[in-house]
View (cartoon, rainbow, N blue to C red):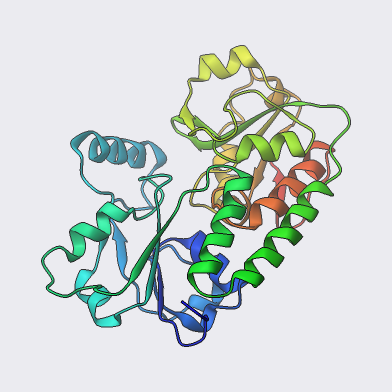
Length: 299
């Protein structure tokens, strides 16, 4: 593809939509997923839906997701007929987490019985599981859309901002929670964010999946700070989830008023450039400073 001008792009995950707009390609996006909440994507055709209601209690969502994964059922459905009508040049999906967004296999299933569907489309699967991987995905997306130089520029700027983050000096022990009922600790790039901010990550390793924990396990680790960043939610919802932990008075973080909530969608859950700002927010949080609209101490 020689240029982003004139391309028709379908983005089936929110982080890709964010990256496309960062690259100046918002005008080329012709369809998005139900989770894409970038303001520039408002009103665009929606090609996906989830089989799980996001409004259900967390324990019910976890149960439904676990059952679907165990039974081999896709968590998302793609409107293959709409995808066919849009006739995109580039379709962007992901292969990192089947719980978070559409995977290439789901696209294949949606268009399998549509003769001639996507004959010329390039399907790009983003695979970043670390900060470096996110920047590689940015470059790959830019190249696929014909704006490689812009991708290199944005990646260089993001790396500069990442390296410029001033870490907290006292190295508190930090637990990040991507779910609270049941508890899941943060994985992929989140441990890198914690370490770049000056914290000691007590559960999870950079580049690996997030995982299920138990409250006795968490109590034994006894972190200094707990940061709630439930996947798929913004600051207000995460503040509510964080407040549900305040009854756990056996935890040092609860007793010391060091339970925090952040905007997971914008800065932690998605493999987008927002993770750089997220690490900076964490650095301030570890110093005890709230970032208005980006973090809040709940108790």
